[in-house]
Image 1 (spheres, helix red, strand yellow):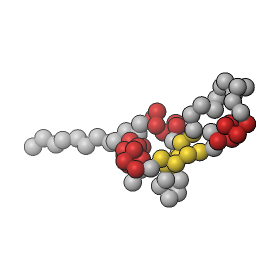
Image 2 (tube, rainbow, N blue to C red):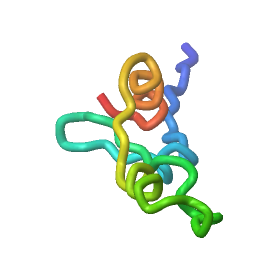
Image 3 (cartoon, rainbow, N blue to C red):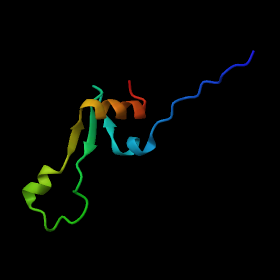
Image 4 (cartoon, one colour):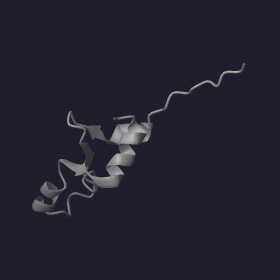
Length: 70
């Protein structure tokens, strides 16, 4: 009788480096556009893109599956 080996699911490392999962299983990401070319951006614009933003909906569900979060 042959056995089929069950493989572990692998974490998507690209997503793991860019996303954070909170204790309540919310997904957080960095806002784009704040790394360089900041001299020409206004102060209010730079404050608006600072900090973390939440990911919701079906995108969050797919990313949780990629990260192995329940």
